[in-house]
Amino acid sequence: GRFLKFDADLPSLARCFFDGVVFHLVYEVLFHSSHRLLHTKFLYQHIHKLHHEFTDPVSIAAAYAHPIEHVFSNVLPALVSVALLRPHVASFVFFSMQGLYLTLIEHSGFELLGGPDDASYHNLHHEKFKCNYGALAFLDKLFGTYRN
Image: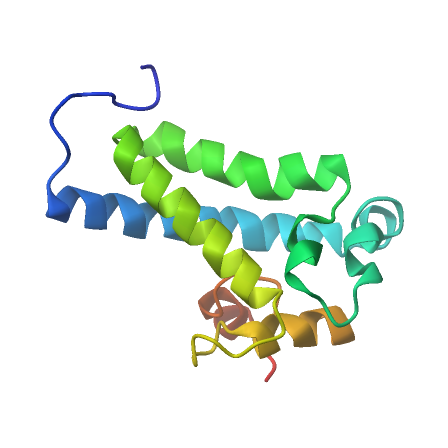
C-alpha cells in the first residue's frame, strides 16, 4: 500500500518498537497542539464544548466529540504519523489498539495504570479545562500546563 506495508513478513520487534515510539510521539505533539487550539474561545464554544459536557468523564465520553474535532484532533495526528513512518499494517493495528485502550482508560474514571497519564490526569482536564491537554503528560509538563 501507499502508506501501510502489507508484506507477508512481519516487522522485527525492534522495528515495531521504533514505529510505536515515533507514532506516539508524533501523535502526541499533534494531538496536544490541536487540543490546545480547541480550547481557544471560538473553537471551544463552537466545537470542543460538546466533548466537555462530561465534566466527570466515562469511557463512552472518549468518542463523544464534534465531527470536526474528531477529524482534526484524533484522526489527522494518526494519519500524519502513518504517512511519516509507513509502518507494517500489523504495527499500525497494534498501536491503534493501544491508543484506543489508553483513551478509554483516561476517560474511565479508574486509576488502572498508576502513572501520570491515568484517569485523574484527564479528569482534571475535564474539571479545570485549562490544563492537561495531552494524551500523555510529558508535553504538559514541558509547557507548564500539567496539573495533578
